[in-house]
Structures are given as C-alpha cells and as structure tokens.
Length: 293
Image (cartoon, rainbow, N blue to C red; front, side, top):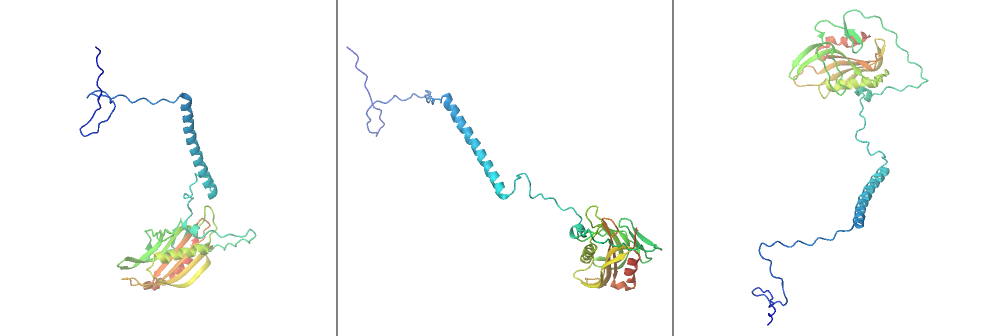
C-alpha cells in the first residue's frame, strides 16, 4: 500500500479568514535571513557611457558659470576680475598740498621778480633752523618756548619761539606768544606755493584751535606781501571772545606764511592778549625782523 500524500494546510491566525493555497513554513528562530539578490551589474560599455555623461555634465556646468561671469564683467565695463576697486591709492600728500595745489603758470609768463635781500639783522635773535627763518628775540617777561603745540586740521608743529603766561584760569594758562614752525605745503620736490591759499588755511586753523569759541574776527590786514626778502602771506586780525574765568576778551594776532624756497613753508604766529596791550607793537616789529636763512 502506498503512503498517502501529505496533507496541505493554510496558515491561519485566530479571527482571520481562511486563505486557500499553500504557504511556506515559518522561518525557525535563529535561522539566518536569506541574502537579497544582487542587482545585475552593468556591463563595461554601459558603465563607461554613464561616467562620460557625469563628467560631461560637470564640465558643462563649469563652462556655463564661467560664461555668466565673463558676460557680467563685460556689461559692467570691468574686464579685470582681480582688481579691487575699493583699494584705490590713498592721497599721501600733506594736508596743505591737498587743500592748496601749486599755482599753474603759463609757459610764456614773465618770471616773477625776486625781492632784494634786506639788510643783515642785528641784536638778539630766535633761530628756527627747520623753518629756515630767524626773527627778533625779546627780553623779560618773554622766555624761550619749550613745548610743542600741534593742533587743528593742519597740525602745524609750533616748537620754536618765545612766550610768557598772561594769566591762570579754570581751563589752564593763557599766553602771549611768538612761535614758528615748518609745514609741508608743496608736492614732492615742488617749491612753488599757493601762498594765499596756504596762508588763509593756516590762519583759519589758528582761529579755530587756539581761541575760545565762538569768536568774532576784526580784520586789520590780509594779503600777499614780502617778509625777509621773500614772498609771503600775512594775516593780521583782532579776535573778540568770552570764556568762563578768563579775563582777556580779545587778542591781537598775526599769522605769516613765508616761501623759503623749499617744499615746506615757514609759519610765524604772534599773539598778544588784550590784557597786555603794551606789547601790541611786537606783532609788527617781529614781522619786519624776519630773515630767511
């Protein structure tokens, strides 16, 4: 007698509908899962075509970006992508040379006559080697200047001369002064100065930095002249002002800018407070005493 065929069952959970057909027997616990089938590898020619397509897409993108940059530069008028427009060269000229460029002269203009040299100076002198000038020195109460005043937009370094203290007040000391300095006023090796422009700039700097604000200006003289046999610009004025605790309410002052034949101009600044008018004569006297070295 032959063995009867094995019975076939449909696996069923409680509550499930009966499903006909055969199902695989459940995997026993701990048995390894069957490995997924390995996808078919593309053959050699197909793989090479895919690589070429990828490389071609990357190269095309780079070319497109380059074309966009070139077109943008062409439309903007800038053909040098490596130039930094923000790093333009700074103007390194001195402030006076920037504010007062040297005057331009016609090639057919007649040469300017050089004033005759004044007679040799005598008596006590203050000598400013850097500025290239000397001028009269005065006795007591005047004493040699031993400080440096460097203020204002131009920062003219007044470090040679004489002074005396006229009063002490809440903001410090107030001075009568005769001070000189050298200030760069021309480009490079040029020696031609726009004296009128330079003189006005220096005088305005003095008024703004060395006197109480606000103040009013009473002009006495202002213009081109000759000092020590050299072209010069002279501004003489009286300033009126008020400051808390300060007795002086006015001051006689003068600023001279002298062309000494160098890229630097000589500056001579004189100030006499209204409380010491007996020294007003010094303003004119010291200007007449200037000699260029």
